[in-house]
Image (tube, one colour):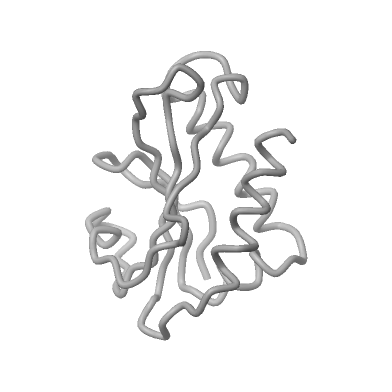
Length: 127
C-alpha cells in the first residue's frame, strides 16, 4: 500500500470519530521521527479557534485524531522536510477536492492547514 492510500485510510478512520462542535479548524502537523523507515510523521488536530493571520491558532487543540499520527515513509518523497511538506500538501489538497467522507468532514470547519509542528502553517482550504 502506498502512502496516499495509507493517509486516506487513516483519515477515514480518524474523521469517523466524533469531532466536537467547538472545532473550527483542522491542522495537519508534520514532525520529525527517529526511525530508519520514516524521518517524519503527520498528525491531525482540531482547534477551537482560527485566525488566518496567527499560526498559533493550531495550538488550541480541542480534538486529536486517534491514532493521532502516522509515519511518512522515506520512499514517499526524496529530499528534506520541504519536499515532504510539499508532497503531503499536494495529497491533502487532492483529498479536499474530492467528494469523500474525509473531505466533507474537514470542510465542515472554517479552514484546513498544514505545516511543521513548530513552524508556520499554510492554508490548504478555507471557507
